[in-house]
Length: 587
Image: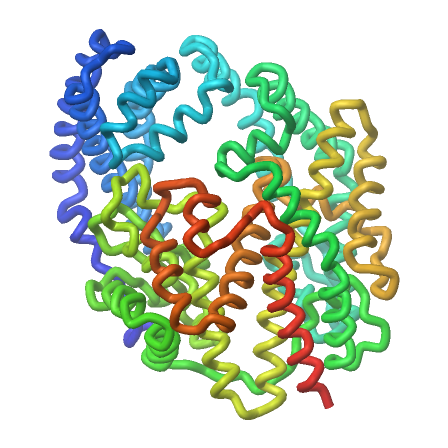
């Protein structure tokens, strides 16, 4: 299949890595030296023309740095065993770290400005407005330059070291699993494939093997977690004076706490919808007592194989029916050879979209094997690409969407494809399989992530008060049983699941962005189905905004109030509709 699959061409970034590296770094050194020479002139009464010139030079520097980083990463990702690419990637990362350290004074100067002069300068620099406002947003929580340097230096042997230690420790774990009278030792990635095994005993065994090992290491992993939480509180609350542990994340995302509260409250209120879905899934799979072990039990249906040409046709058809403009931009990614779908030894697994510069067509990597999930992945990653392309009029600082909106176009693209496939599908069993796939994804990205954050909220408070690891485990288990309700048993072993979630160690409260993004798309899709074509221009306007305003402001033209539980409820109305459609398809 690889012979017929597209591969990308990275020459729009660099032609000759070594020569171009020398050329670009020479330019960067000169540009950064020019910016450093401006340091004595950075004062509160700096003139608007001088300020704009400095920030335009900063923009140019950022574009050059981004181009180098993009090429080094993309070259490495197409074959991670390529020693030349790996060496180049390391060389680029080291050089860019040095450049970033030389430039940190610019952001710190801006953050030290008084509000009057910050407003004066921002008013005349619209191209950079939201980026500057974002820097200002952190001003109350920013320390002096020397204090920031101390925290950065100490973090390498403090927080970052603990995060690395967690990764090194857990990545070394192996798990013993017995399948068909044969016991095998597996990595975690290999083990997790068995939670989708057709046999319930194998699924149960896979989870038990996972939690046995993590449970045996609960003292070490639990202490790592407690120390990371303590560090988050010490820096965020004690030193930087954030109002709460989650406020650190909210301000980064530029989302008000009222919106996050509304989101999490609505998720908790609607846990019963997924409980009903799992009851139906149990019926569909003929599982007498559906348990937590069975969550990812596979639905056996006739598997279709897709050629890449057919996958491309379906994705383009889905986008075209919604917006010819989006279809045109998605097609552009393929026409310009910016998509790599081939299967090669050493190629990075998974899929991603890399938006480099506002003026440049993004690069997309997928590993296309012809499965139905690969078609969805193509729709998803091209959604990311068209989002960036719609925002190409903005600066490199503001064309990327913020984290809560980052999955909007990608997940919306998946729903467009799913809707098309459901309309075209006549076989009830295949249709049920498509619905199961959608609902499994909705659970994993919405309810599961929201309950991680519910746990974190309690855990951070408990750690500050002093708590045992066993008490944290019981809190997690209590929330898990609340999530699944009285009719879906959750075994005691799941009390150690929280130790297996890297995000809550490395990026506290990050997970609500998944719930936010997925539920937002479901709410918007529900609105699209109700309003029809009149919805499309406002949706395109949202994409065109990129990261030029807060999520709240970008969503206003769509008459979306993210602080309202009613808005988030609309997303669950869509999920409930899918559950009812699945119920109608059952014999």
